[in-house]
Length: 507
Image 1 (spheres, rainbow, N blue to C red):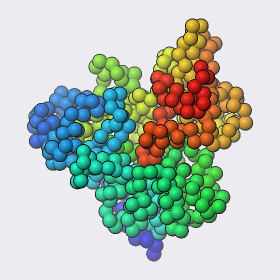
Image 2: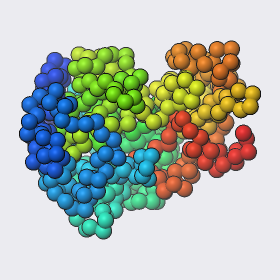
Image 3: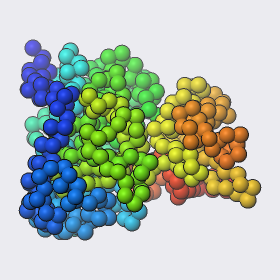
Image 4: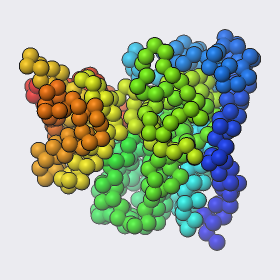
């Protein structure tokens, strides 16, 4: 009997529990809300918002406002200085450093002991549980797990309180037994210099039997490329013949899919998307043939949603999970056992099913282009790029896009800066297919493009090799959970990148 066969038995009880997501969603979420309110009742935030009077969802809505990071920042800073019972019970010692808001370079998301246990580690456990349900012949535990992590540092100089990438916090707190089945070693995994870390990870893992890999697609691809350089092999299965699954998340997988298929040609290779963020672990792909993810309902996370057409208005509609509609784009709000209350996470989702609740990530509330009423979101961009790649044989590694605002002749367009791992056969055709596909899937974009009256044909600028990595390095954000902003309503990011690319005079 293989190690995986033995280990799989420990997941059977949880696999039975997960079936409740299919027909008891409202009950599961109501139970989570009761748990959160009860455990935070005597905190500073709980007293200020009279948690003791909250008996149901309507009471919760009446007592607790919708929050952004700015509204919670003062309380989070008190927690970082060691104050207890502020947003969550007890003292929170861990803070996940995330990309900044409009007012701050970085956000510091509290990660409580309860949140580690019943959100983040629960998500990792369920990723394996669901994968084993889909793949009963798996041998995942017969080898090692390659898990990419970030780094951390002392919080305000305190030796027992740290800030850093969520992945580093998870590695720091993981059950020591897990280190018996994962690579690289902890000291390598937590290195802050990604270029050094990349090389060390490759060297440490080449001789191991790696059966599964986990991480952000862009950073994992960089590590795997180094593995191939060091070994001189053509395909990854020549290095790790038992590799069977990539648990990926953090950024959309679409731009990287072709490159992974070239790198890993084994027909038995699987790809499973996870929705894990600094703020929590929210979704898992339970059917590898369906890109939609199952919303995880019985962790320490209560969900609410704002229709995107109302997002940013003075009094937007906010609905609980049981109030969502399929096919509609929503901004997601979360309340968690880490002390985030009705918190606007910044991601947008669209539900594909209500029984069970399954969804796809469509973008970010701030990562879109709507300079001319076109309402272009990341989901549109990913689909358009996939079509353009298929039509021209191209492969996209990284990209960003922004508007070029109207000149004196009322001419305007979208400008796409794209780093190709394989250039298209015809860049003009690539642009034509991308533009045409965007019009097919976005009626607002189509209307603005009508006869070039409002919005002219988009422009493609090829980026030099490693442009986006160099930009992230310049920003001190190379590696970890840092991401390239895909779409922006301003030209801040693209102008920095174009200058680095040598295109600053192009306009």
